[in-house]
Every structure is written in structure tokens, then in C-alpha cells.
Amino acid sequence: MIDSAELLKKKSRNVKKGLSGTEIDEYLAAMKGWAYEDNHIVKAYSFKNYHETLAFVNALAFVVNAENHHPDLLVSFNRCVVMFNTHSVGGVSENDFICAAKIDAMASHNYAPVAH
Image (cartoon, rainbow, N blue to C red; front, side):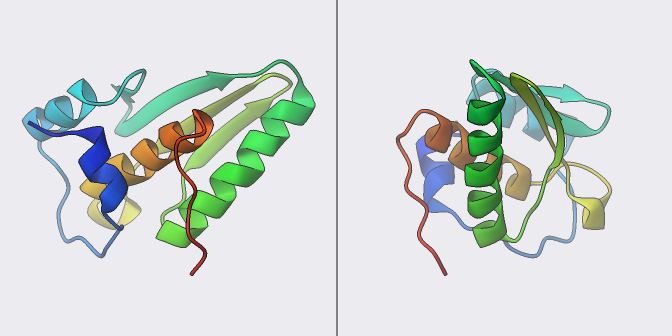
């Protein structure tokens, strides 16, 4: 079984193929609040105000840049929707789940990314 704590230990890497539907379901079972929609894994985060939303986006940018794996974002006043897929494989890869786990940990203040 896949564990989000194990994903935190991993680093995004070049991948040649995406995950199967069954594999995506296994990863999603370990990831609270994430869903599979339109060939992406997606999660919405809510905040008190615009300032908190932008602070989250800036912290997220630091995390994903260190992984060299960047999501699509929909940002509004008190909400940010994060959407990952791996363009090079035309679907979802383990890299998407690695970054999702790190963003979740960062959002819950349990993860301090290391600058590279």
C-alpha cells in the first residue's frame, strides 16, 4: 500500500510512462482530499483571505520548483485549486503524487522543503 509519508521522502524524476487507473486509485487512497478529474489530480485549498491564499501559492511555488514539477493553479480570493499532471507522459505520474504529498505536508506545517 502506498503511504504519503513515503512520498515525502521521494524526489520527482524523469518518467517515461504514466500511472494506470488502478495505480492512480491506489495513490489517491493515501491522499486526503485529492481527486482524479480530467486527466489531473486535483485538490482545492481554502483560506481566510487573499493574503493567506497568496502566501500558500508562494510557498507552493517554492516546493514544486525544488521538485521541478509544476501544477496548474486556479487562484481566487480565498481559494486555490491545485491540478497536477505530467505533460511528458500525457497523464498522471508518481511525480504528481510526490508533489501533492509535499504540498499537503507544507499546508499542514509538517514539511520544510530543502533549497537546492
